[in-house]
Image (tube, rainbow, N blue to C red; front, side, top):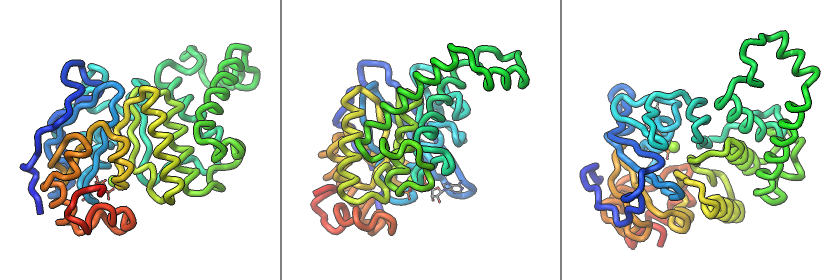
Length: 308
Ligand SMILES: Nc1ncnc2c1ncn2[C@@H]1O[C@H](COP(=O)(O)OP(=O)(O)OP(=O)(O)O)[C@@H](O)[C@H]1O
Ligand SMILES: [Mg+2]
């Protein structure tokens, strides 16, 4: 078993000369006697794609929760776009341009595909300005506006629909033919796609994806890889948690490896893949977990390194 003290020197520091978009320092989160995140620091430059990998229970999702305001650190700070956002609520962070998806997927089952994505757009609007810019009107007037929407509101709704439809089209014919279908009727993979589309409707500056290909077959995984590559190509900054290391190796500018809540290695994918501390962490855990047995085969049984 490796220890948290074997952090290797990053071989790539593209954020060195510019202010990072995301900067977290010394984050600690304890659950009773367990330290899920243990003194973690990390910076992300605009346009970078950084992957966070590590065995099950390493603290990856907890780290996302701390960054996105779903949880609050016991110690440490989170800065986003030059502002200290430690302790900010999730919706406020969404308004600043921070969007995420969840490891186990979260969609509104009774809403249609289109409406799920529109929720993302509305969250953005709600977070950046009061409803309709008329905070003092009260519920009766709001009802009136809903029943008899002024032209400006109708035009805005149309614009948001067009935007949402465009985002949905990123997923080819996976979602577009199902715009009006309730999310609960979709396949698991399609529900994951809807969730990503909803996050994109927030127009994020930073997108955090927690195992976006979990439960997807190789074809679906390859498709998702291309979609993430496309988002990166458009300049979106992405923090990715992923157990499928082949995908991590292909997409990442930089890889951060966590174990027992701490960073045990960081650097270019090729360097991390052969880092003895990383190999030890995975071997020590035998595999990356029952839910990821297929992927574990690519990492663990060989001592040649990750992703070989
Ligand atoms: N709300 C919580 N209460 C208590 N313990 C928690 C809580 N959330 C996470 N943990 C524990 O913290 C540790 C880190 O969990 P986390 O979900 O962050 O790991 P992970 O790296 O995302 O793992 P996986 O790859 O399986 O998703 C685990 O031991 C987990 O059981
Ligand atoms: Mg997790």
